[in-house]
Image (cartoon, rainbow, N blue to C red; front, side, top):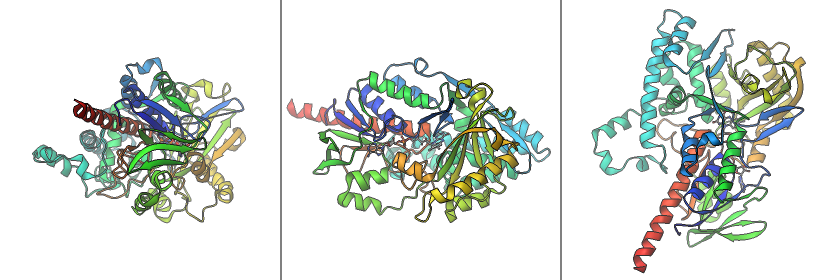
Length: 512
Ligand SMILES: Cc1cc2nc3c(=O)[nH]c(=O)nc-3n(C[C@H](O)[C@H](O)[C@H](O)COP(=O)(O)OP(=O)(O)OC[C@H]3O[C@@H](n4cnc5c(N)ncnc54)[C@H](O)[C@@H]3O)c2cc1C
């Protein structure tokens, strides 16, 4: 590789776009491919009957990751995106009819919890939980973030390991505990615990199976807030695509990569319908397991597939154009299931849709009136489901499950006349997600984060199997969700860049 390498990015999800921007900002010659006709992957948009829906991600957290990508190119994010803070962050509707708002300020939230369940120390328990979360967030920043990690050995270098502070940090990762047990150790009220469980839904995993370190997500949200980019989360994809273009990247929507050219264990190019194009390095934003299976193939692909990776959950999304908005909804709302253990058992163990699910709602019209005709609402409803099993036929399953979801909203979210207000309706099933985005078994969030010891680890960003291959996206380190996939893109591009510079420094030395 050369310090100005020819780099192919396969896939224009937010991870691929971030990787393209950072590689181009570091001086590499970037070509970005996507099989779809739009750039942004799951951060797609739907325009229908005067309504505008973000089709995938809607909750934006940790904006400093985006800021860092724009800074790479010496640009100010505010010239590209108008980000508005949302506080309350979520409105929560429980099955017993009670409601509480999740607020960013920890002291205010603790006081609200004490009003919600008086006399049991709920607020104090929440503060203690956020204390644990803050610590785990700090440890994550030191061990996992902004570096190409694949396993425990990558996180700790031997010299640092001799440091008692580092050993303390490793022990404090609470590898004996899950997210659910950590929350319930501090917050005794079942409804409040159920609310806090849902941070780990950002990574499509069960709180009963996810390692305690993922409690860090709570502090990321209290410390850095929840944000809405005016124009919708789609605006993030558009801003990154614009930046990549300005930095000289060649953008190729509607061009699928069918395979990688590999010689002597190193990437030499990509194969598309147009033929083979030579590249010095490839960053794959396609699902990691499918990258090895379908793009790398051969012995390496088969060996990789034998590793036991579990897809994260999938989901059903309803896009409902309403002729009248519901003023009691917040921008983000959770309508909780009657029993979280039952719900997570169905989704993550039995592998069947939950009979009484939690529904996440986005009702953005109060923040951004441009999403709907005046007085209306572009209501987005997401219910997590299991990843696709061979017997799942969503063409047959969808109509009945749609009704389960609508009935849940009518019953628990104070929307008894919901069906009368619907004037536009579209939907996405796990099968649609699988086909549109070429993911693993319809998974929304890449690979599940299950397992107390290794649940936090994903395939590393610098391939150990193929030289010159790097991975970015929800199924690569550090994992799914908008901020993490963009960080993943940054890490993949940074690893590529430092390898290219190392190689060119060696070439300079031997020429001298
Ligand atoms: C319904 C839904 C709701 C979500 N809600 C949130 C949320 O509120 N907050 C949040 O932070 N996250 C959320 N997420 C998760 C978030 O959207 C993802 O983690 C993130 O957008 C995935 O980015 P990615 O870089 O992994 O790429 P993806 O978005 O998965 O894109 C990968 C791209 O690669 C392309 N591709 C694949 N293979 C090839 C190939 N061989 N050749 C060419 N192109 C190829 C695909 O077409 C696709 O465009 C949600 C996701 C969904 C689906």
